[in-house]
Length: 443
Ligand code: NDP
Ligand code: 2IT
Picture 1: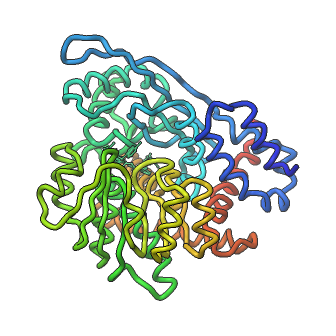
Picture 2: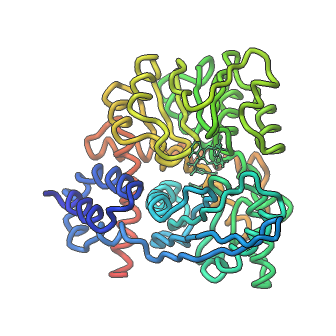
Picture 3: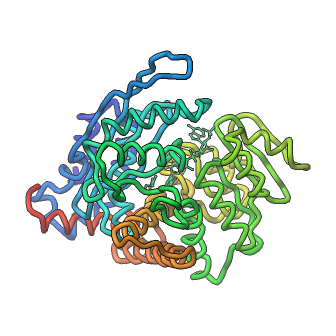
C-alpha cells in the first residue's frame, strides 16, 4: 500500500464517524501520490500524519436566551488546523448540521486553499449548530455575544482570524466584532467580513462569487473563449451564488437557475440579481418569492437545478449537493465546465464522472479562494490602518484568481496530470505547506 493510502486508511480507522472529513482527506491525498514519489523525505518526516491532525480543536457550549425568555444551548467549535503559513484563517458556519466532521473537512480544505492564495494565512474553521433562520435580530445578537464570549480567548489578529460562511454574514460578524472589542478593550482586525464603516474591505462581500467567475474566465480566455453568450446554472442563493451570478451576467452570460434548501427557480431569460438581493439580503426570504415577483419563472420544490441545460455549472450552496446522477445529466446536456463555488459540493464519483467525460472541473479550494484571499487583503488593510478602493481590491482579487488558475495548471502539468485541476490545486496548495512545515522542524 502506498504512503498516501496508508494514511487514508489510518484516518478512516481513527475517525470512522466523520464521513465528510474522510471524503476530504481521501480526495486530497489520492492526488498527492506523485509528490511523495518525488519527495521521500516527506514520508520520513511523517508529514501527512501531521497534516491530517488539527493543531488544536476547541469545543464549547453557547448558552443564550430566546425572545420568549427560554434558555437555549448550542454546541460550538473552532478548529485551528494548521499555522505553518500564517495565523489560522477561515470562516464560521452557523447551521443546524454543523458537527466535528463537517468542520474538520472544511478546516482541512482551508489549509490548502489559503496556501493557493499566496497570502500568509494558515487554515482554520469553526461554527455552531445554531440556526439563524427564523431568529429575530435580538436573538442572533444574544447568540453571537455568547459565542464570542468564549471564542475570544482563542483568537486574535496574529493568532486566528475567523470570518463568514454559511449562515454567518455581515450582521453576525458585526455582533461578534462588537463583543470581542468590548471584552478585550482592543480594536483589531480579528475578524474579516466586517462592515465598511469599521474596517471591512470593499469587495469582500462580492469576493467569493466574483473570484469564482474570474478563475473560470481565465480558463476561457486561455482557450480563446469567453462568458459572453454562455448559459450558466447556479445552485444556492446566498452570498457566493448571488455574486457569482452578478459577475457572470456582467460578463455577458445568462444565469438561469438558483436554489435554496426548499426549492429552485428556472428563469429562461436570465436571473434579475437585484430582485434576488432584495429577497435574500434584505428580507431574508425564500427563493420561491422570486417566481411570485418575476414573470415567466418556474419554481419547483426540492432539488433539480442540474437538469437544466447549460454550458457552465457553478454549485454554490453546500457540500455534497451534486451527485453522479446530476453529473450524468450535465454531461448529457453538453455542459463543458463545472467550478465549485461551495466547499466540496460535488461527490467524489460525480467529480470522476465529469472529468472522465471531458468536463473541465475546478475544485472549491481553487475556485472559491477569492473570498478568503480578499479576507487576507482586509487583514493587510487593517494592519496598515488604510482602506483601498473598490477598483484596487477588485484588481488584486482578479490577479490572485488568475494566479491560482495557472498555479494549478502548472502543477498538474509538472506531475503528469495535464488538465486535472483537482490534482493541480491539491499539489500546488500542498507543496507550499509541506515546505514550510519541513523548514519549521518537528512541531
Ligand atoms: P449563505 O448562508 O449565504 O448561503 C447558503 C446557500 O446555500 C443558501 O441558499 C442555502 O439555502 C443553501 N444551503 C445551505 N445549506 C444547504 C443544505 N444543507 N441543503 C441545501 N441548500 C443549502 O452561505 P455562502 O453563500 O457564504 O456559502 C455557500 C458555500 O460557499 C458554502 O459551501 C461555503 O462554505 C462556501 N464558501 C463561502 C465563502 C464565503 O466567503 N462566504 C468562501 C468560500 C466558500 P437556505 O437559505 O435554504 O439554507
Ligand atoms: O470557505 C471559505 O473560504 C470561507 N468561508 C471564507 C473564509 C475567510 O476567512 O474569509
